[in-house]
Structure formats: C-alpha cells, structure tokens
Image (cartoon, rainbow, N blue to C red):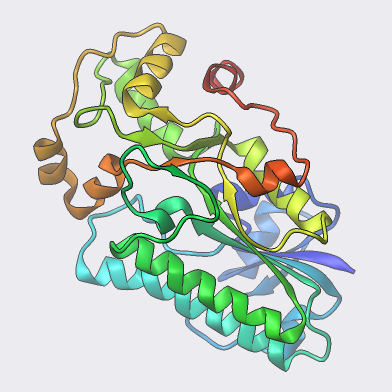
Length: 296
C-alpha cells in the first residue's frame, strides 16, 4: 500500500513527496506532475469535480494539501469563494470518493491552518482552544468538519493546523526576503502581534509522524514550540541577513495596499504544538534563530 499526495506540486507538497517512498501524486495536470516528479505515478484531481472510486486504489494514506493560495491576489469576493470552495467543497468531494471506494484509505492527513483560532491577542492557544469568527476561521472550521466526516468510514483523520511556514523555495519567507535584503524590512503594524511559525522540514516531519502514529487523530497544531512577536521575528530576520529593519509598515497602509488580507498579517495568534509534542515528535528547529541559520 502507498501514500497519495493531493496537491503535491505546491510548496509543502513538493517537500513531502521528496520524503515519501514511491508516493502517488494527484493534481489537475497529471502530465505536469510527471514532468516534475519523474518516475512517480500521477492521478488526476480537480476539487471542482467528483472523483471516481478508483482514485484510492492501492492507497493506505492520503495527504490532502490542495487549496487556493490565500497569499496571492487581493481578497475579492471571487477570490474568497475560491479559497473556501477549494478547501471545503474539495475536501467534501474527496471524502465522498472515499465512501464510494471498495477499500477506503486507512488514514487521511488533511491540511488546515491556525487561522482556525482567529485573532486572539496574547492568549496561549492549543488544540483545545475554540475557533475564531472571521473569514479564515469559518473556512477552517468547515474545512475540518468535512475532513472529519471520513471517520464515519473508519478512516483515521488528522487535521494539521499550519502556521507561517519557513522554507527556502517558497512560502512566506520567499516573499519577505527581497524587501529585507534591500534594507526596506520592518515590523507590520505595532509589531506586537504573535506569529506562530514553523520550519518546512518540521511541518513535513509532523505530517509523517502523524501518519505513522495510530494514536494521533483530530486537530494538530503545525507550529514550532516558540511563537514570537512580529517585532521579534522582524529583528531576527534582519539580523540573519545583516540588514537594518527600520521601516515599519503602518496597519492603515497595509490595509490600503493589500485589502482584507492585511487582517491575516496583523492578527495575533500565539499557538503551541501541544498534541504533537505529547505524541513524541522532536523538533529539528524549535527556535527561530536555528531556523534562520539553516535557511539563510
């Protein structure tokens, strides 16, 4: 039996695929997948269409990472609908296909996000904390609800609530590097908002640990054990690049420049990885300085 990665050509998916043994990769374009991952089997997946029961043939574990990017483009009504539909409706269709399969997979590892918690100031947030009530929080609640329906089929479900992912070849760090390298970096808003970050290697490690450990189910926070304020994060990044960080971006300018998505960058989420730590996962990069030293 093998692993199936839905959304395997994305930033996280590419790195996950590289750490699995002979996985199957699914996405909108099997031809593109085959070009990207030579020698691996590709299967067609479209979150807007129903998937045949044969999609899960010979599959034991599904990693579901597909979804419209929340980072690129202003949050117009159409963009927000794509964000929601690609996650909520797409996950529903995936579980419906599992229900129709002759043999559903044993495990579903589904992406989620710490956006689940909403903006919570200095409150320390674990998997036991309740949800927020903004747009992303409602998306995450409904997204996880659809994933958890697979439990009725006997599938073990884990929802990885991911924080700000730091990696070399994409994600949040890649977008931050250019202004910081040019000396134009600075805190966002007050800089007092908490950022819950994670090194890409640890995020993939958490996914693999959750897939292998049969005792883990339900929500798992995919964050490092040391959340920091935006001010601290900014100084650490500037220091690692040996650049100044003296040009703060006022909240009003940020909202004017990028619209509603500014609420995500200004939200304070002080999240800790309680469940995965209790399950024995050992972080490779628990501290921000170590993560930046490795990545930069």
